[in-house]
Length: 256
Ligand code: NI
Image 1 (cartoon, rainbow, N blue to C red):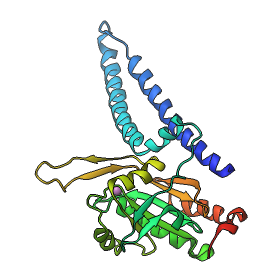
Image 2 (image 1 turned 180 degrees about the vertical axis):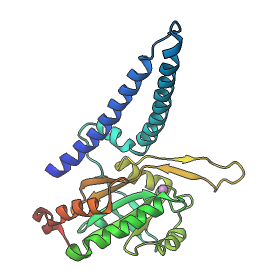
Image 3 (image 1 turned 60 degrees about the vertical axis):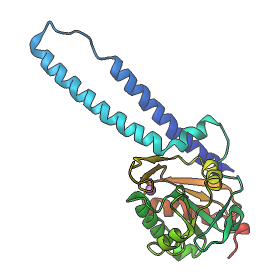
Image 4 (image 1 turned 90 degrees about the horizontal axis):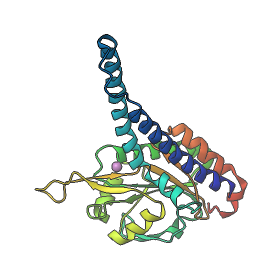
């Protein structure tokens, strides 16, 4: 319960940091002096300075917006208060066509990732990272981590597509998909952000999906424990998962 609370607290910290940066940006833009034209010389330097500041804040704002989107999960959690992530039963189908529910992943630590197989770069690199995390835990905690990829693009991520995609990464990863509604149950439960981007007019199957890039660690009891962002290194993530795995309170729920 303590760990769970602290993970939620980190979500709140993340989101309040974003809010603080936002107010800093607003303060910056309103403090720009107006109509300072009497002194010619220094003005050039001042306006140059302002331009740099403005340029910087545009970039900053751009990055902030991007950050806000990918970490929407953070602000959503804050707005609902102490509500936990996960805990909602879901039913999906794996890459072999078998039904899978959240209960099937109890008895091990599950690592959930939400993405889409047509993702050009981020999902492949996150899946490679998951492979490295599995390898990093193999020595001390062999077979205790079950990674699960859940599609946010069920339209194209069919069972067949997922089975094909699985070949490219660590074979321990399960690939789940379902109907749009089934996927929505799982994504809402973890407050995953995703949205279709740059849809091509001439080809309705050619599009990208903007989505949050977060790994969720679930306890052998099915409770949300922690989340790991894209910025965290393999070493950091392995270190954190290792601590949970060493915690005796989860030992009784583990099925070896
Ligand atoms: Ni992706």
